[in-house]
Length: 208
Image (cartoon, rainbow, N blue to C red; front, side, top):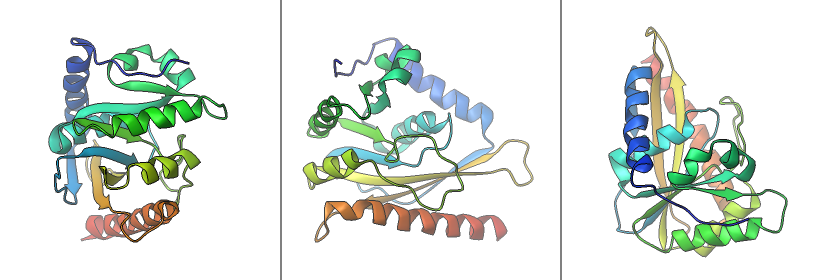
């Protein structure tokens, strides 16, 4: 398995515009909650994964807030199926194989360069929006440990509600995670605490 990313000079700009247009046409509004203080470092985006839309939402967030070169890890079989993502920053990972270490090391390499953003779905697969906690793949902890202090780690939780509108509204919650005085293994617990907090905020916001 060959690891690497390509940003085609035609496909990558089209993907950015396409992501914005898809969201504008299909969502009533997008509400972003949380602050990002840009420290001039690479960004590791850890996001919940419950829908086909997740990658487009991450690109939207990158264009609006982070403004970095977009990369994302994707299962090798899915990347082969949706080959166009090879030209928009996607790179492969093959679960339960020795080559997964190559994907992890490549992610760490990307995050050593300040112009990059890497999107990871820490649970490694699609899961229900209504799960109250997620289990991180082991590689996420390894990546977080290696980049400690070298890149900004941002938690993102996406939630969707319709309420009285025919189109859904997207609620994006973000928070920076710092591992100072913490063990890398605590990142899963910290993310799940943030996830729980976001569920509570969401219920309150739609009921107010």
